Length: 389
Image 1: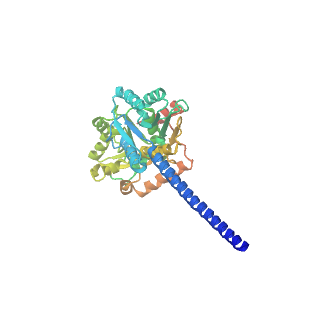
Image 2: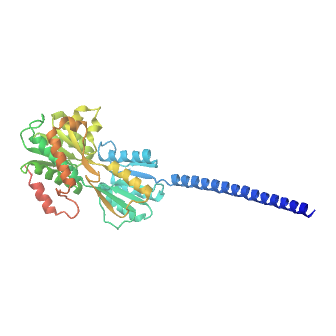
Image 3: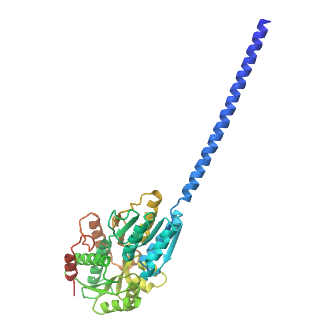
């Protein structure tokens, strides 16, 4: 009897133990499943929150789109920010009426819809800086301008080393005007430069261009003219024709939309042009081959790429607000276009020399003069005077 009771007791104890273990297993499984579901939900929520927090950008164009140059490059960058990064963008074209600039920036900042307000600082830096000070919680980015570092902690400036790209353009122009293999070149050692107006950045283009040309021929002559407008293509054409009639066979216009008039003059007169800001030959490719073929290359300011770079940094939270970055050949912020027209219309010997000069710049063997920053303006003027006809 005692044995039977003992056996029964052991049996019951074992059953209770199994039941207890089974209960713990079920509870643990349920808990694990719940925790897993919770983790999945948190991950999904975090992903959704990340998507919701993608930065938004508005580009205020203080000029006109369709310039096949600076503004179009910026606009292309904005489109890439939307397509590649999935960010909300807006482009507002307000033209050159400066009375509209400040109110537009103020309205956008007050509305606060966009995380970052972007504009061309070469024309509107003072307005941007003023509005940035009025709205310290709004982020601003201005390109093609420098700034006093640390003064505006909500403002980031992108400046391009246009003197580096234009140095290579000067090398190209000097080699072309002296070449016997270029059908539209004459025997005169004369090249041209046409600016939209006298502006520090345009002068920086000019001194780089002169330095590059003089590295090929110290005795070369550079004809310099200013249109007095950034969008008057008729005046641009007239200015270019005047230079061509003086024996110039290649012109580098740094004049935004007005420079398209120079391209028209070159195509009609059978002369050469070096484009500016964007790859202008490719913009005419397929639609106007006469113009595309006279644009031997273009001095690039990779505005669009620099804006995409900025947007990627904004996503990462690494934009150095309060500072200015200078982008040149090394950073792919500036350069000389290499396209099918350059390859087809420029002799190999000239292309080889340009590549050698570029490498010397990258290696730090050539110091290219600049008109910006602490540059001695007397030296800048002396350089310009040294090539005057």
